[in-house]
Structure formats: C-alpha cells, structure tokens
Length: 127
Image 1 (cartoon, one colour):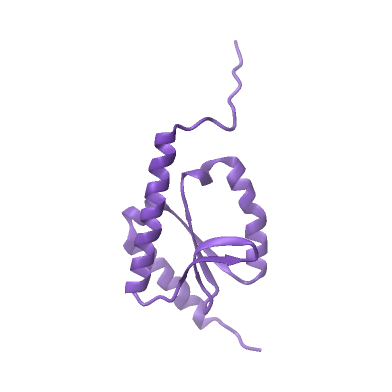
Image 2 (cartoon, rainbow, N blue to C red):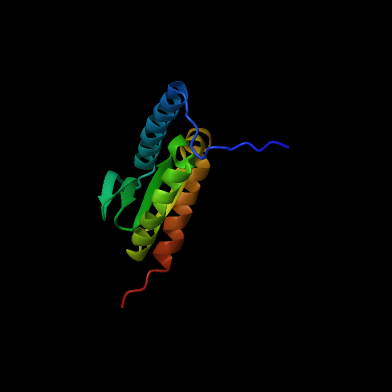
C-alpha cells in the first residue's frame, strides 16, 4: 500500500480566486444596500482593535463579517482565532456569513440580524 501526502495548501487557479473576489464584492454591496433599506445603522469597512470588519453597528456592538473562499484555508482560519478572542473581550458580537449565503438567502440574514439586535437590546443592563 502506498502512502500519499496531501498538502494543506493546494494551489488555486486564478479563475477561482477572481470568481470568489467578484462575488465577495457583490455580496458586501448587496448586504450594505439591504441594511440601509431596512434602516439598520451599520458603518461599512470599520477597523476595531486592528481588525477590519465589513460592517459594524456601534449602538448594539454588532459586527458583520463576510467570509469568502479564502477563509476556507487553514492559514486564514487560524489567523482569525486571536481576532475572535480580542473582539469578544470588547463585548462585540460578530455575525459571520459567507458570500454565498448573502447572495442566495438575504431575507434569512436580515431576519437573524434583526432578531439578534432585538434580543440583545432587551437584555442590556445599565449599572
């Protein structure tokens, strides 16, 4: 029986990368438009503690991250681990969606954002 080494990083064609980038840009644009139409006050392309987010709502401390094809690689996924710890320590909730989800099921995404904001705004404690 012969053994075969499977590389963690496999070369991806430029065509696949370009398709992913094009869809990612479209997804960000479509979500931004829909958030605005629904009256959500999210800021686009916000930097928080040296990390970039596609959208951020300072009122509710909710960030939205749109993951593209690149986040499927273990290198990129591992880079996100410290980000998750730091951002959660600031009390910020990150809602993550893939560009595919945004392009195919926008209504569900808007529902989850609305429910998250509704639930967490009711459970805010002021000391």
